Amino acid sequence: MLLKIYESNPDPVAIRKIVKVLEEGGLIIYPTDTVYGIGCDIYNKKAIERLCQIKGLTMKKAQFSFICADLSHLSKYTKSISTPLYRLLNSHLPGPFTFILPASKEVPKNIMARRSTVGIRVPDDSICHALLKEFGRPIISTSLIETEDLVYYTDPHFIHAKYEGLVDLIIDGGIGQMSSSTVVDCTSDEIEIIRQGEGILDL
Image (cartoon, rainbow, N blue to C red):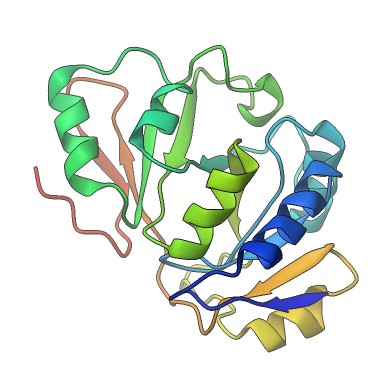
């Protein structure tokens, strides 16, 4: 199903329809402030297994990041954040960044690939924000297509034609971006950019 939602004013009825899909263990494709993502409830193992099949991954090798509604929501899923790190996160979120952080016990083990860290995003996107606020839990965030040239599907109608039989719902939030999020490793005292993407880090 392809569901049109306008970023300027996300329809609450449509948002609740998407939440119901997530609550029932469904997979969705959704817009972010960068590329379109595919995801599910981080606590639903069967949904994550379906996602791994689509991405051609095994549960043991999958390293999924996820999106949160805001910084306070994010803090639930990471260990104690120092004041300098909090300032860094606060000044860049919401935004096109994935921050690698030490995972708290709230993060399900099946999305950590035997690691003690996790990637967390807070997209600057009103559809994502409305969805996360209504759902109340994080949603896995992984891009549809990854290539060396960072060529992603951006047109939701083309995405629908390709993924209609693989996922339960596709959100048409307009044409997506071509570049991915900037990945920033914050697990040591020295901040390191792992992948330069849409976001420009200001240290």
